[in-house]
Image (tube, rainbow, N blue to C red; front, side, top):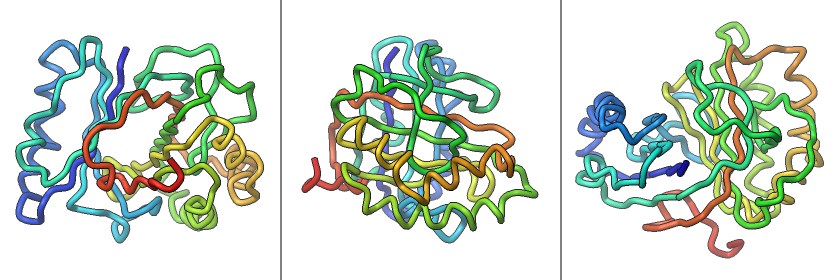
Length: 240
């Protein structure tokens, strides 16, 4: 299994074309037979959530390939810039749209930024290099506002975390279906933020009681390669 995260920057005039591709491209990819899971996603500015944080000129695709990864040329044609991260799953817990998109691991993942209800586990052996942490949640409508209030301090603390190379919000919709992507220099940096940062630890403790999520997914993936324009994902070259 190989996973890719493609992120594109499109010019404002191409936003309608991007929306059309978000609606049509997943079905076309699934018909090709070499894609086990795919989601086309909007992105946010930084790690924020909600309509005001959305970036209509940046789009992403998370694709789980059962064969060799291919370029997603439909989006490439309209993009002003593009970055692809090639990934290998290390650990995951939870579901996305009722499915487990990655191979069933023997260890549970931990990550920075909500959603998270995980407890500390042993560090995976293959996360010594760069690690991508993916979080995704479907919020309970009655819990959305309390969640945004609780997660604000975490989002504010995240950019200052040691070892963080980039982080941005993702979502299938501006409200209710959302998550984060963050890339770290190594697994030790992920664990340090997840369990030794007061803001994130508080959210972890509160999650079981407050039941913010109707569905959630946490995944940790090894970053095998990063190609293209890293500025598209806000890469911090000084920390790389």
